[in-house]
Length: 351
Ligand SMILES: *Cc1c(COP(=O)(O)O)cnc(C)c1O
Image 1 (cartoon, rainbow, N blue to C red):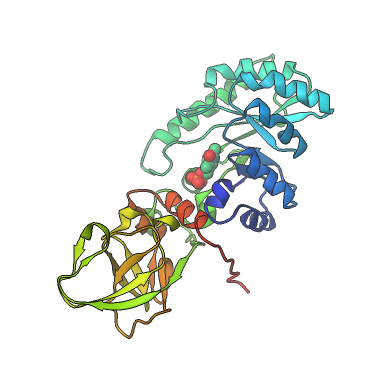
Image 2: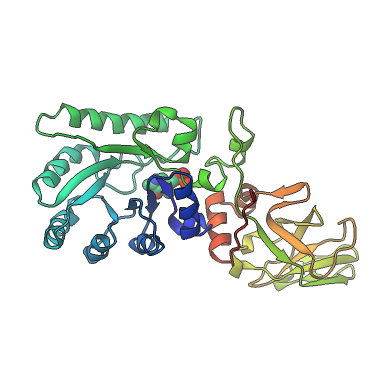
């Protein structure tokens, strides 16, 4: 199951789904019904799992677009059964178990009862049971083994229950971290997200760790310098005057700001690539403009030159993990922000 929620982690829902389908993805994972509809309208035929829960009003669209419901408790079941019967369909659903994530789903102890309830309701079929890991981004943690143990214990309890027949039930729990670091968690299906976009859940250490295949980050965030100007020493820059030049300073003005997801927390912290060299962001990032000190950049920096906020230029690279450290967050959030707030262009580097 290729996770394409949040508009493909900022990379584009439909574009990514088409690529992943071409590479053999058997199913897609989205958060919302609307994302599932967009995949169907784009012609994708694979199962689409709606993972973030459901409300009764979503059932007609679920049926119409043949989306797979992920059920978190018993409340939706009677209505799901009623509407499926009325439309003459049988719905194959998956159950979401909280095996230690502590967020959403039913507790393992509630599963046998739910399974019986689903079996008893007309037009409903249990196709799978899933859980989610909270800590695979910390490879040293024992938590993943513990949560996996709770999940497999639950499966064993179901298998031991003489009243329950589980044929063809798909068990799945592994996200990118489970898939990459805990091979025993792969079970019947895996649900990678961040790894598909070229990042490791644990951030930069994942890339440099031994024995890992090098994932290639897919996204670059690039702009063009909208003005180059030189100001004297002692000039206070931008809102709040948070940076004062200590020397004659050449500034590159970038037409990018927090409206583009280049958050204010990057003020006086981030670096940008200009002419293949790192240059510091100076002063506050504002809504649509950011200042970069290019005084030390070798060669002439000119109006219209490319500036790279994320990705490679020449021999230098700024990764989403590095940006995440400046923004005090994780690569996932950087990719969603940059990708979903800006125009996207797709390049096939293999052609
Ligand atoms: C987002 C998500 C994933 C993917 O997680 P990554 O860490 O990006 O691999 C897998 N399963 C569920 C239920 C999710 O919500």
